Length: 327
Image (cartoon, one colour):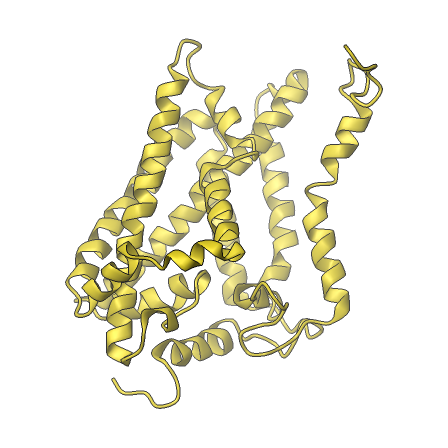
């Protein structure tokens, strides 16, 4: 494969952004709803609803498949990746990083985001799911196993990622750091190209994207269970009646689906190709000033509730800001 003036990833990003996503010319051009993406969004919410509608006991049985299958695919991609030409170049790049990057603040931001997201810190999911354990359950042991499993998964996934990047770099004759950007570009551009090189590429491509869907559903399971369990605990008299949980979950999923229809338009996918500074896309489009206000409003919408709740205080206690000092 010989490409002049562009990398393999560049040639793949263009069909992805224009053909599949049909990205508009800017944030001010909303465009139309992609019905293929809309149907996929609907299918995901329907699957999520029926996986958790009967409670955590039924969800636990579903997770046996949704959590184990990604590890099976990870092992397959690891074996295949390490057997590709140029894979060891990527492994060496992975195991011998550049120490000077430790002075880059962006590296620490990415690391913190990964840790907070993978452990579900401050999301309430760990507390909610942990509340279903037996009262004498060894939570310290579970916590240690969670840390070990999470870190080991990330470490092994690094071999899968960089072995594939090493292969792509050798094909293009460039350094690994120029193959692809981090983020969704790896999942939706580089890895599909690597899967296409395997025997029966259609089968492996289906398994790979099914793995991504299951990973997303696992994350959504925990978030929805946290919200529904909180509502049930706040209104036990009304919510513990037959079919109340299913009805509330149906309305919540329906409202979430309606709100996320905007994500199936042509403009919202610019979020996949953003750089942190400045606020531009990989194609050079610079967002207008009012887009910053929209971004801050979206970011603060999930944070502003904390000081409001703290100021009002618990219904049965005084506001935390009104408690005298020394108490």
